[in-house]
Amino acid sequence: STRGFLELYDITMKALGQVAETFKRNFGHIHWHRLKPFNIVYYLEYMESLLTPSWKRRAHAFAPEVSVKEVKELHKALYLANLAYLNTVEEIKAGLREESSEWELIYAQLKAAPGEPAHYIALRKDKSLSPGLVR
Image (tube, rainbow, N blue to C red; front, side, top):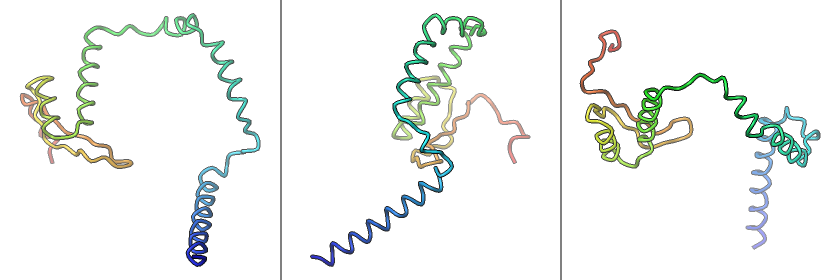
């Protein structure tokens, strides 16, 4: 019907107005007339010519060496961080047991939201909390 179409048109125009206001509020400070999308292609080509494998070797030649022990610790930390993305508490507990039997799961929040990532808290069983940490 015509009435239904006009209502839909009004709702759409109102929503587009809100989108335009939000865009202006968040991106109004950018000088869009200066943006030339094809320049990005030339920039990428230019950077590709500079960042050759030889350049990358030189850039990392003076970086401090990482010991095997540090790599193993980083791998362990990465594994433990990855457990937060599992689907159930049981999977997190199994992952902690697989890594080592020294971890005890204290808390797990599996639902993620913007600004509130899924996470868990696990403590080592053999470590006691310092009295200064508990209030």
